[in-house]
Image (cartoon, rainbow, N blue to C red; front, top):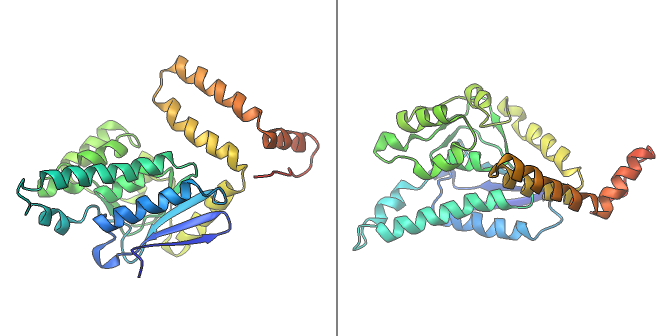
Length: 261
């Protein structure tokens, strides 16, 4: 049984973390499986959208604490292992951000600590009503410093800081209000609603979405003048795409576009 399952529906790739007995914790094996699959998806031009979900009763409960404790048995008390672990986890989160295809998280049950980081790192999220989100490491004496990076770039800083310092959970209504998720739906329609969003995005011109995702995150890190200069250059590059020319022509001629990609 694979720890990470993949099946494709047309241009949509479905990734399901498959370690339900451990609440899909981000173990060494899970991180490696995610990294490897994301690398493959990066080169797969047939895939336009990725959906990330978890098997069992939870989306992801964060790092595997038993593995982390075992790492302490090294002569250095685990320092090298912990540094490597958090580097590998951060690399997976960054890989989601830099993946050409949009990634939609489909959380249910709980998404805690690095599991909440995983939701925050995805481009969009459709959650099952009743899902609980938290960066609750502080409750066991471990401040969620790396999950903080993604969370604080998703929701207002005071609310992020409150979650990080209290270890309190928020529900889907609050997560929606803060902008951590795009929508909350009854669990029985979670798969259908997520697919509907994925199919809408997958139906757009793939090259335009790839250009747009890269530009979206790049301009967020810039000042206003730099952002406008950069985004103007991106618009020029997009306009020179043959399929963009076809899309505009088709719109003006009131016909469906004949895109090559």
